[in-house]
Length: 104
Image (cartoon, rainbow, N blue to C red):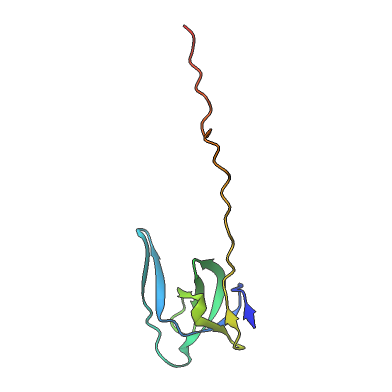
């Protein structure tokens, strides 16, 4: 069974990579999660481009961004991020209103 990453969902993470969001952008680097029982976390409900924010209370008490495809719930269900297509309005070429010049 698959579940969506919802706030408060307990997950078992075994990530190979982590997204680090900073002022200059985002960096994806190798995750530093030690083997063992420190992999249990709670989702905050925030997701972005295949990553979900996980509060790792047992590990270090901080929030980390791990790939959703590398998580299972505490019941063994696969966590999947819902993809929402964004439709762009049709471009008719009239993006700007005509500029009126003052008659002097």
